[in-house]
Length: 123
Image (cartoon, rainbow, N blue to C red; front, side, top):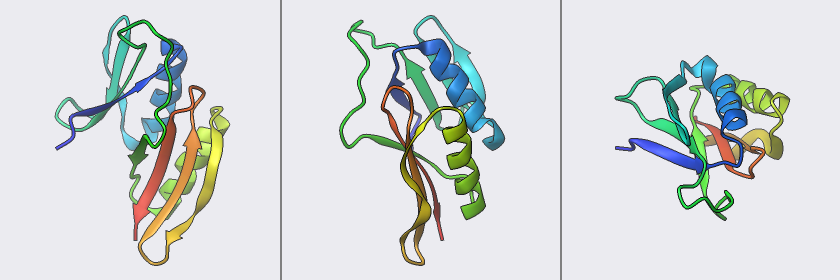
């Protein structure tokens, strides 16, 4: 149902490098690379993440309550993505752990532009 999600960024090259490396273990790569937007995903037929400089040329800003969640398929995958994001310069917004007992395991970070990400696994 979802085609892609877009995050506004202040430095397209840095964001493209961060997300390409972060999501590489999930099989994602840059699929479309243009002047102000890049699409990262497994294929054009699967949901993608787009990072872009805002079309209106105003400063990028993270939405309050806006978050993108990635599902790596296991608790170990959640831990790995969280640790990789932190190593790539993201800030912690909630270390890995069970958020809803026996239902939801998750971890939260913010990228350098303040965009909030969740890595999650439904148990």
